[in-house]
Length: 417
Length: 91
Image (cartoon, rainbow over all chains, first blue to last red; front, side, top):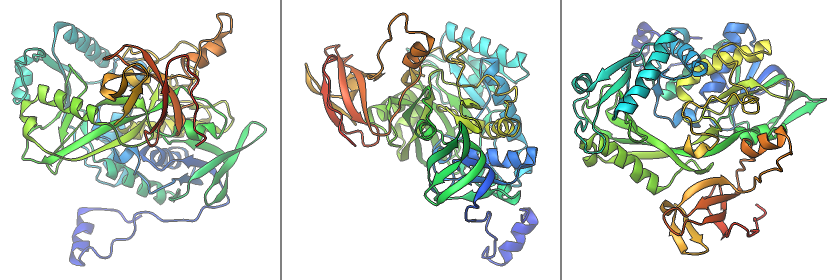
């Protein structure tokens, strides 16, 4: 792998940037691999990278039906945080955040990790109590959290509607180490680093079947022929139900659509991630100046990667209630992604009832921040045929055993998560 | 954008409805056992294609409407009352 550096950038600038080598190979699939990962998004690529780096398993292929990183990796609002209530979640997401903090050096790739802070507003005494409880849970587990009062929030984000008649701002829960990262660069960085360690990234190769013999996985059928594998990992969030069905599994997952938006470019307006407490709305500003924001699910099963106008109106209304100055902006782009909604809002990184088949999915609308931690834990689970303690609770069986990790307390209704 | 033909009110905007999920799951007998209840509460076929589902006409007649809708195209093939057995297109 050609290392990227300032000096190399300067050298290539002198030749008009015409001689950069390609960042990863385009190999044909080999007849078989030790591990095949289905899905070339951030999670699949990270899994392959950590299999090679942490466990020395380099005879690995990532098979992707389109180009890498064009699913939910390229469709999120790029927020990175670990501000969860339950220890099962916050240990995992904190480990992911720690990996984010060293990711650029590790991958030798600029993922534009920006720890600008994530601020969750609250608008009532009871919401303050819930925020304090979550903040305390985070601090007890070694994660940074600060409970801010109204004046402290005002000093940080002056443009909010502090005296909104229905939702006055009472304060906020701040995680300073949270922030944003460049989503495409995460896929590219993991792809390049995995490729450098010998992983084959096979694009435009759709899995059409999972071959099994005697209850054990032997490989995958693809549009480019059969590829043998001792172990197969599924990392296709959005389409997990469909791929798992190829191995006869029926999962506690529904696919739902979530929309996101970017406005016209502006001068600096919001220098952190701010979330509304009285509606589902979160906003940050990209380095290009566009405001990046989103809200809740459309709320019906969908694989369509596009949503409905009532939700667009609802998300904007929430945004304008929080920050009235948004009302005069124009949205330049709007898109939808397919969310793997589990029945408790928490993910799955686990073994499956099929020997040699592993599952990584159910990311709901929180998959991006988990990318490095998810890959790290999934690699551990595949390599050792057993979970790491960070993902030990993220099993399929938890639902049957009454151990759901229902952070939001919404019950088994994915459209309400 | 969905236009849902409520059997009682006629074609109405989706904004009047509250989604209530997969209409193919049915509650097992009380003594059916834990696996049957696990499937009923948690697991879903989650098809990419035609999906039979409940839409509650919350801002209208407040009846539950059964809808056959495509999860990729968002086309609606049929709507009916809760007890109706609706035809699901082949593909």
